[in-house]
Length: 468
Image (cartoon, rainbow, N blue to C red; front, side, top):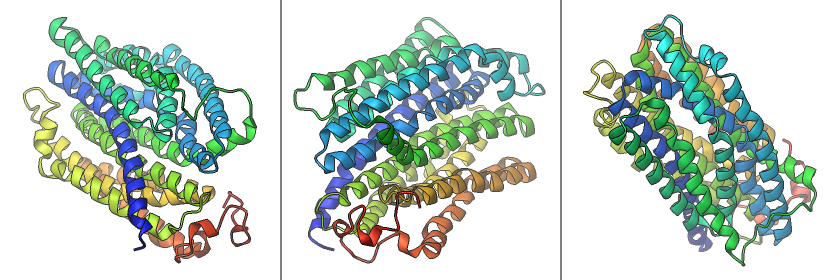
């Protein structure tokens, strides 16, 4: 390996860890809240929380087009010393996401009963109680859509402009305030589910106030501006953010689909078990998204600065760092799945515990493979191979998943469901690392050619066009 590979590794590690910490802390707060609900309220309320939260996160995933796309696009402009364009990208992304999030907030607020009917099953035990709780929680959590959007845009900007420490402090403050408010409501006021989920908006306000301290810095890249080529910049942000949005969208779409499937075929206990494993899924998915965004940002910079690292070096570094990290973090869950599941249950909940432990182990195996696939997705984004990336994201996050898991749960109940979780990414690995490179060998210049020698628009890359 060349001498500059150590610098490449350090750069990847710094951005990967910052992205991962932020990606982990948000679902960690959700996991803590799930555990408190399961421990102090009951498995029915835990199942309701597991059904409602994905719906709210699904609404916010629309804005991930801009929050995720902002990182590689702004990083590319900063690499080109075009800070005015980076500020323009930030500003138009913020305005657009705010408008969209206000519209998305109205959906659960005004159509909660209809959404609750869609999420629940009339044949399930305690069907009416579950439906009423869903309506209350949907309306309570609707206000978090705007707050989550502002948080995500500010976080993306700060991660690029040396604001990693501020993001970390804000995220920790969010978790502590969420935990503190929920504990106060549950243990002191003896409250129920509706008041507990109010910890979401309160904690988000705390984090946003901390992130806004960034704008007191005199030396900063991002300023709010109404100047620049708005339509062109917005299009580039959307193109870069779409793969991550597909991953997030399908993650929560599958949660909604599988919750209803489990409710109809097995019962409330299976939904509660899936909610528990889903908490760890969200937690570890932060590493997968971090692997994608970090690889995309560095790949974009390498093609715009006079670096001598090759894509092969970047791919190897990304696979090693992200693969080792997700394996180390996931190993304790593989070994201690039962104690991890027990944290969410009052008195063990005998019928839920073994299912939850099985789902947790299968989820960890799935996410190790998923993270490796996300590295390649980051390379595609950095090279602007958008169409191929969209196809592979849909295949590995939706098509393969449904094709394996729906027959699995219908044929073998919870056993088939878990095997489907663990096994569907085998197809994704084969597709991303074998099928795509064989079908499109010129798409990835991994032959050792320095990346800087192939800038956008060069003759060697004239087949790119940013659309392939």
